[in-house]
Length: 270
Image (cartoon, rainbow, N blue to C red; front, top):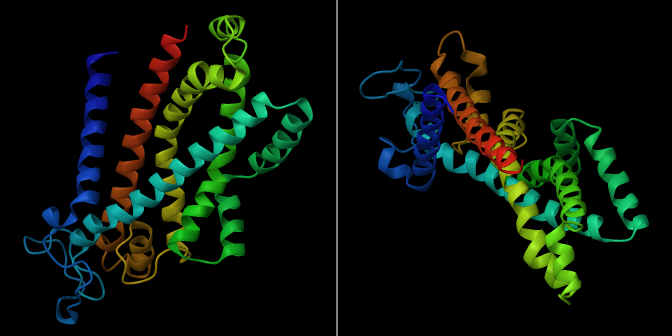
């Protein structure tokens, strides 16, 4: 890894640490109440008093971006975690079960993978209805097929590896051999994929919120803030630009870290 790449990686890690701190302790970084309205201070441009300006209701955009990190990143993390666990379980079953079970599960999975993730999420929201919990469920179901496919492939590869076969010859039960020798390898591969998937999940969740299918006003959430400023973009660009920057920077940083981890995992596997 070159010095420039190493610097880019550390910058991405630093951004993710800052976002994580904002999500965990928003009151430390915020300067105002994110839902406090002040009609007389509406649509003020960025200044020393309001770093990112104010919105139509006079709410401080900077504070709303800070507090929005917890909800926007939280939905992405929750959806990715559930998709990882569900993908691991279903993929492992497909990789170990008889052929007819494997074929049945994979055909359903292939149908889901044939559609764009965001389209699947929209269909799920149309069935379940809007709301932050349903957004997390929708993003999970949209992202899950990729984890299922990888878990199934890794399970089928590792279950015939030499060290697993040696354990079986020594009398280790099949379930114990899977738990000790197969599961860690599958989980490692899924974890690397999840690091990249976090960014995609955050982007999908913000997109659903932008369409009005996620949290409702006055909840500080990046996608919702983007939607709130789209009608006054020419007059007050800061309402949409700063949450848009937050989404972009977070997704890019997560993707950079994930790709580096994936490259190292592929390099160590050779």
